[in-house]
Length: 317
Ligand code: ACK
Image (tube, rainbow, N blue to C red):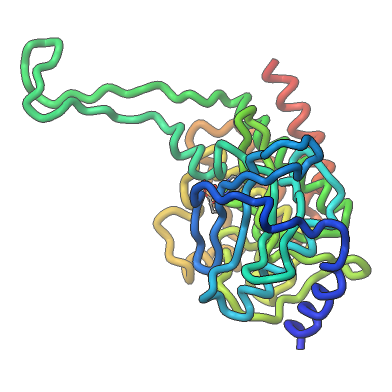
């Protein structure tokens, strides 16, 4: 029933001015493929009124996508197009819906997703080729460690930008439901953009969204109330945001290291929290643990989080 009413809603709304002529899109290369969709770096003629071909990202469903996956894709399209523009939310440009495949055109973020970016900035161990002589004249393998290239100030700044984007979503009654480093994009100027609104919901008029459909769940990012009875809200987004900050501080580690999904489920339900990661300041860990308060009402708002991070950043100088 849900699915039907969603696609009916789409058919009505698609007749608006953001339909973009498909022939003015040139596909370049595939940026990534998920289970049901792919994102292609493309060029679109005059999509932002410059009269030129602009580089954009085009998201589309695969032909093999299930009905639920197609519904998630259309949900993302419908939701993204009505979010008022914000620096820290990926900008939606337009769509092609009059024939298949349905395309969603959005701004291109050259640095890809934050998770991959963070992992790529980890100190690397470089080893000379086997048998290659080293400076010492021997030919044993040596290991040189490259220093980390991200400062704690930069990591705070990423966290703050994402919190600003999340505040914008909550101000507009949108629950994202999949807040994670993999769902943040990065521009060439280091600007964070929240993306992937496939699971997001407009909760106008209700405080909570109860999940009804089945699908893979981002268990390690989920608040206890979302895990136990599918209750999603801005407060459960705050919890997930705390996990995202943990990912940022650990340069993209997987939350609850060494634990299986069912162990995570039990751990979180028992009211336990991840320990302070190495190199994490007390202040930032304090912020994470506020986000992980068992009682959702006791968690900070995104507005509080922004203020705390602004103070921390000022202190960094
Ligand atoms: O790390 P990535 O290149 O960043 O791999 C994923 C992949 O597509 C699947 O989501 C990339 N991607 C998604 N949306 C965009 C976008 N708007 N700009 C640039 N890359 C994008 C993402």
